[in-house]
Each structure stands twice: as structure tokens, then as C-alpha cells.
Amino acid sequence: MLANQKMVVDASRRGVLRGGGATLSLAALALLAGRDALAAQHAAQPSKDVEILNVALGLEHEAIAAYQLGANSGLLQKSVLEVAVQFQSHHKAHRDALAATIRKLGGQPVAEKSLEAYAKALNAAALKSQADVLDLAARLELGATNAYISVIPAMQDRELAKVAARLAADETMHFTALTSALGRPLPAGALSFGA
Image (cartoon, rainbow, N blue to C red; front, top):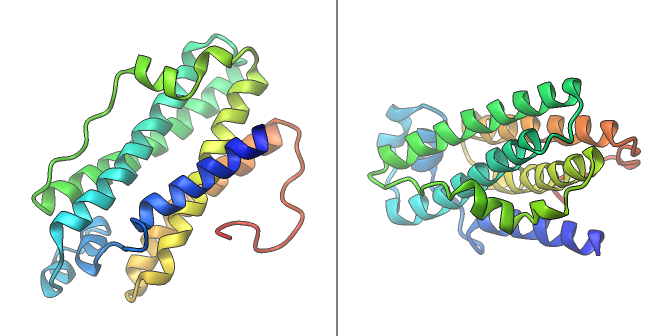
């Protein structure tokens, strides 16, 4: 069952950022990269971009909540808790960048849900050990890695591709650290992410 959950998370995150085949416009990606002048040069479909960015923002809200649930669980050793809080801070930075871009496009950033709503959606009641918490986080991070990698090919501007790659790198770093903490082997083959 765990393998099936992993595939669902991976597929949903990839598909969500692509918007079912639609990708972010160059203007939205330029805004996300902090390149307002470049954004002004390209016509965009702001409503479509806002929709896709809001889905990504929703996923960042979910990641922040997952780390909060782990922190609140009392299941994490002090050293693991410190790393979880650090990873959560990375997701907060991603959240802030996405929300700022949505506002620049004239949209309204999607609000985060209550911690209780995320607890229910993530089945936090099933978390009984540190390994359970780390497994949940690793699955979410792998899904995020694959999602961000999936949007890179659509980018014509190298700087914009770099932004998506940096987000994917953060997620990959998180996944790698969590996998190591779980005592699991890292992916054996090359080109394991984004497939």
C-alpha cells in the first residue's frame, strides 16, 4: 500500500504543477524568479498562471503543515527535530516566493488550511514513530522534487529554469537527508528523479 501512496503523491504533484499539460507562462516564471522587467516583456495568461501557482502554493502549505505535525508529535529526537524545522523554513521561503508572485499577477494566494485539516488529509493519526514521520516527509519531498523538475523543460529562459532547478534541488536535498535518516538506500540508478 505504501508504494501505491507514493505513486499517487508523485503523480499528483507532477500533474498539478503542469496543470494537466499547461505550464506556467514565461511572465509568471519571470515574476517567480524576481525578474519583473522580463515579465513585463512577455504576455501572460494571468488567471491560468495564478491557478497553477496556487496549486504549488497549496503543496507548500501542506509541506509546512507536515513538518509542524512532525514537530508537534513528540516522536522526533532533538537532532531530527532541528533538521525538520530547518526544512520547514525552506518550505516557508518557497511559500513566500509563490505568494508574492501570485500577488504580482493580480491574484489572491490560496489560504492555508487549519493544522487539523492537514492532519486528517495526511493521516497524522497513523504516525506512531519517528520513522513514520520521516517516511511521510520523504514521500512528500520526493513528490515535490518530481513536480518542480517536470516544469523545467517548458522554460525558454535559462534564469527561469534555474529557479525551478533550485526549488527541485531543495526538495531533493530534503528527500536525500530523510532517506538517509530512515536508513534506506539512496536511488541506485542515475537519473532517478523527475521520471
